[in-house]
Image 1 (cartoon, rainbow, N blue to C red):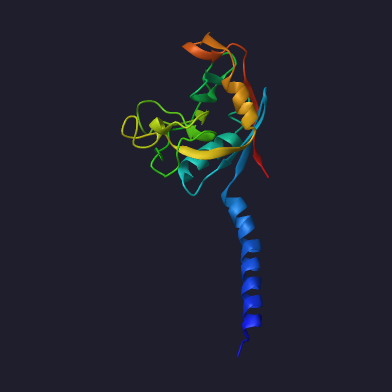
Image 2: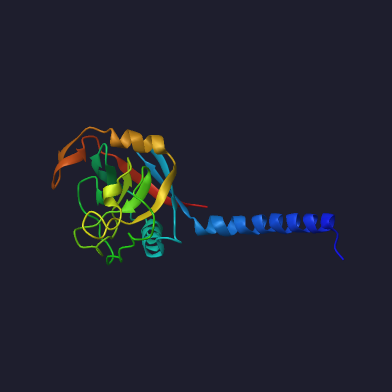
Length: 194
């Protein structure tokens, strides 16, 4: 017969062991990527449980060094900052095939979340992403076009850098009639945080 005291200690030991063993699994399931930019570092924590194909796609571009040398080419204070597709001379970098839209995953386009940019075609996201600089409920599935925009992580360090980027003066640039930072904001590197 197990006494109540031993039973309580046993349960506490099991709970502690579960926490110890669960911690590495949780960390493994939530990869982090550091975006080193010309305005400072941003660390995003990704959510492969909710957006597996989107996270896999993003991490492959990180591994391929695709984001190194790209810029934030679209900045709208009170909305979002977008990057990941163009070089400083406004040349679009090569991309792989588009991925399926994972907007209906329960993640919301809240302030400081990272989501995939796309065209009017739902399954068209490739390399470009954006960071919401306010709660953008109108981007959540199924809005604004019956599909929404796929959130796949959140900023966990460097929100002050995002705030600096969103405040950049903008104007026309390259093929864009507006919203391009007048001073280039470069992603110097994107690396997986070990």
